[in-house]
Image 1 (cartoon, rainbow, N blue to C red):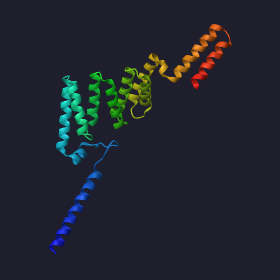
Image 2 (cartoon, helix red, strand yellow):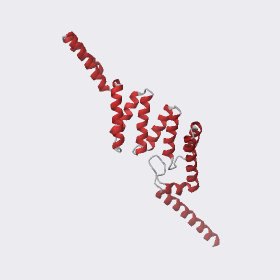
Image 3 (cartoon, helix red, strand yellow):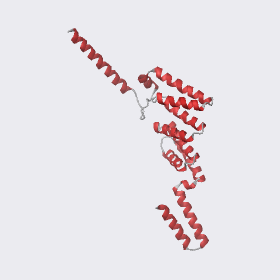
Image 4 (cartoon, one colour):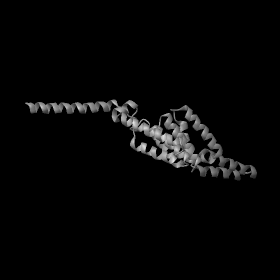
Length: 219
């Protein structure tokens, strides 16, 4: 009888533990990228000590950044990203990492981090701002088509009107400085060139040339 009671007791304890774990898992809210959405939920899963360790690591990185120790800051932030992939400070850490790479004249790495931030939070102000910065930096390194595409997507999104306006301003400047990046601008330029030939020759040969150029562009 005692053995039976002991077995029943163990079974009850096991069921209770499983139920408790399932209940905690259901109560914890996760973002789409797998990160935990709130501080309280993070502490539920990983404990306060781990949360505090992550905060200390981030603050240390930020102090390195302020002191100008960029290489050390980069190393510390990469450790943070590896050790605390679901920490509430993850986006702040990635944003700082992008900033440090830019200060360290490593723009391509900075762009990659900006894109990662956007993938982590595509509908938030932080994520969209990082995407905008990726577009601007792409233009600064000569990747005009990539930069235009990113800026166009930021302009067309519906989550931040402010960033949409900022992207529109950048696109206007890009159109002025590098009109050939825009397919429509390329066609307009070809038409203008054809019209110039028409005016100078005063005949249909220029007109034929303009139309032929335009048709080639369409193909």
